[in-house]
Every structure is written in structure tokens, then in C-alpha cells.
Image (cartoon, rainbow, N blue to C red):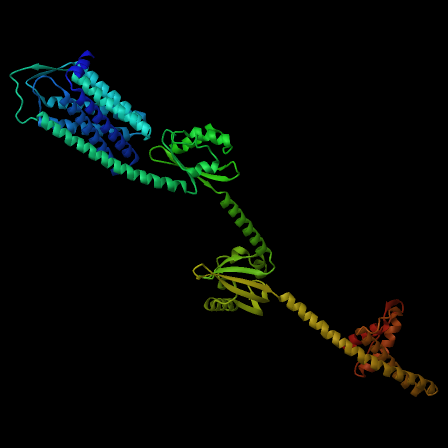
Length: 626
């Protein structure tokens, strides 16, 4: 340590030493910033940022070394080999680029530590290649323990620098990483310079083509300009990235869904304000760097998570490890329903979206309710309803009344055409109507008409068919509403028949009433004539026959009055043999001489309760119509 201290205090110009430290810190700060840009990019863009960070770091190490070498005053002339000096710059840039690439190759702290060690090795490669380029009239001897110490310091501080850089890209973390990288370079350089001992040797001369301190100063100036240029490029790029970040943040915060992004260590690296507002969470808890467990415990506190935190994490971890997407439903504190979807990323992290689906679920339920209500109405409406596709005229919907009226099950109707279901004549009639409907686009109404059903025979129906069009006015569906009016038509026929019979009854009643008046006069006169001919048997017999016929006419008149409901029935206990005997005497005159009437009476038949006139009329009708 004394040799290092003595080297710094006696053999160096402090002004140039401070300049070297300042240049080292600024280039380290630029390198860490460029490294952060590389971490945020991917593919070829990431490779470009890595190369830029490596070159910047190499130039910084190289400039720091040779500014410090300008500050070095060994007391003898010095110069620098051109080829080795250039090689030292390339070595620094190449090795540090590899170190940065290693830290990005794999996630986790170990990769950053290994990459930092490689960066420290790059510092050592540059320094000792640069010291190899030093030309003096003497020989250089090295203190091996200090050499090893210098390399170790560079690696330790380099590992610490990248371990800090990968934690986050916040300003404080960036400054700490830059400072540690500066310590890696500076501690290595001045420890290694303390290990140098120059032994004068007059036999060794400086190469004529070597760099003088003045030329070296120009080279350092060029390196500084290169670093400044790359720093400016990084600054401009950083400005563009920040603008894009601002745009991305604005877009994220205006999303309808809440968004979270986690790294493989389960730490939050990105979120939007919609997520915080959706659950009513505290921004003091929800911030980059917090873990998924922190968020879930906070959800428990505000009452938006019912599941156990450990169980939730275990399920999520298993799904992410298998590369599966998980989906859950949660309730927020204000009663909203949230749909959560977690999708794994290639690096082991995952993205979670939170969507408020309360309104969508309510709308879906309302649509389902309306659909169920509509289906219930369509199924129970007492008329046939069917829907066909306009393109191929196949039935795609029928109701229960349609099944009943056509005598077919739903499975026998759906997917088939009218030609497949109806008899040829009826099918042609239906197809012609469809053609007119599609051609003229006006509703088609058919009044009462007969049609042969598939299994119910000929029925009388009325129908109305119309076209349903899509939003672009293309014919989409044919809808038909058909009412079976067969029973109504039969009822109307029965009503008309009843009205006709009522009219006949009224006419018959009027005629019977007038005829009854005439018979009353005739019967009265026959009674008088019967008294006058009681001593004349032959004439009396003729009068009795006329009187009996007149009485029969009176009974018929009473039956006509009964038919027209103007004369009530008069049932009474009647001897059936006596009734048949009187009817037989009348039939003898009615049937004539060509027909023999054979009457067989049974004396013990008994009596019946009957209207004699109606019973006599029934017997005469059976005999006459036999």
C-alpha cells in the first residue's frame, strides 16, 4: 500500500489525476446509461446498445489510463508503441462488451456478477496492454502481489457496479453503478501503477515510430470526443425513449383494463393507473419493485381477494412455470366483477390484465333473460312460427305450434326445405311465395286458403311472410306466421246451418199456425157432420175416416209447432198397443192397396211415457221410408 501511496503522491501530477478520475466517472455514467438502454431493448437493437456501451466503457478506461499516464512522471523520457496502444483500446472495448452481454444473457443477480467480473478483467486487459505499449530507456519490473490486487479490485468493483445497474434504471441506482465502475477502473489503475518499478537500462532505446506524450494527448482527446459523441447519441436516444415511454405510459393509463408486468423474481416492473383505481389500492404499496405477495396482501387488506395468498401464488407459479395462461374472477371493494388473466413471458416473467366485466356480465344476463322470454313466447304462441335462411330456404327455427300443426317433430323439420317436408303441390305453392317475397321485398299476406299439411291432411290457414335483412340490406331470413283456421271455419259453417234451420223453423211455425187454424174449422164441421150421419153407417164411416185424417193433420201441425219451438211437447202415460193400432189404421190409407201392413200386437207390452203425436209421427216416418 505504501508503494501505491508513494506512487500517487510523488510520481503523479494531481491535476491530471483528478482530470482522469472525472473523465472516468463521466464515461462510466454514460456506459451505465447505455447499458440500461440495452436492457430495455431486444434483438438487433439490444446488440447495438451493448456494442455502444462496451465501446464507451473501453474508451473511458483507455482515456482514464492514458490521462493518468500523462500525469505519471517517472523522471525519464517515455513514449508509447502505436500498435499496442491501439490494441489496448480494442481489448478494453471487446472484453467489456462481452461482460455486459453476459449480464444480459441470463436473468438474475449471478449473471450480473459474472458480467461485472468480465468487465473488471477488461479493465485489467486494457491496463496491462497499455503498460506493455510504454517505451522507456530501461526495464519495467512488477510487484506480483500488487498486480493480483489490482486485477482483483477491478473485478470486485466491476461486479458490484453491474449488480447495482441491473436492479433498476433510477437515477440514484445509475449514479451508484457509475461510481462503482469508476472505482473499478481507478483502483485497478493506481494499484497497478504502484506495482511498477522502472530500472534504467542505457541499452534500451525508444522506437522512433512510437507516440510522444503530445501525440498521446491528441489521441486521448479523440477518445474523449468519441465518448462524448456516444454519450450525446445515448442522450438523444434516451430522450426519444423517454418520449416513447411517456406515450406508452399515457396509453397504458388510458386503457380500459388494468395492467401489471412482473419479472422472473416476481417483482413488479410495470403497471398502469387503471389497475390502482379499479381496486382502490394505495400507490404507496403499488410501485415498481414490490412483489406479487405484497400486492396480494394489499388486496386482502382492501377486501378484493378471497383466496389465500400463498395458495394463489402457488397456483400462479405452477401455471407460469408450465407456460399456461390463468384466468380468474375477482370482486372489487365496490362490488364490481373483475376478470383477471395472467400470461407468461419468455424470460420467466408474466403480464396480468384486469378487466371490469360487471357491465358486460349484466348486459349478457339481460340478453339471456330477453332471449329466454322471447323463446318462451315463441314456443307458446298458438300460431305457427318458422324461420328459414334466405340463401337455401332451409328451416332453422320452428315453434311448438308448428310441430303440432304439421304433425312433425323439430328434428324432422330443421335443416330441411319445404320440398323435403310438404307434398309436391303444397311445396310448389310455398316456394312460389318465397320467390315473390324475395323478388319484391314486400310482406306476403295470404288470406284463408287450403293447404295440404305433411301429416295432418288438408287444413285451412292464413299466413303472413316477410324478409329480415342484414345491416348491409342483404336478404338474410324468411319469417312466416301461419294460423290454422280450420276449426274456426267449421264453427262458422255450423253457425250458418243453425241460422238456416232457425229460419226454416220460423217459416214452418208460421205455416203450421195458419194450417192449424184451418184444421180447427174442418174438425169442428166434421164433428157436426158425424152427428148428422150417425144413422147412415156408410157415410158415417167416411166421415170418421176424414175426421181421423184431420186429427192426424192436427197432430202433424202440432209437431211442426214443436219443431219451431212454438208448441211444447206433451208426454203422458200411453198404451203402446192402442197407439200402434190407431197408427196402423192411418197407415192403411197412406200406404195404399199395393202394400200389406202386418201388425202384431202384444197385450202385455205395457204403457210408456211419450208424446203421442211425436211417437205416431216417428212410426209413420219409419213405415213410409222403409
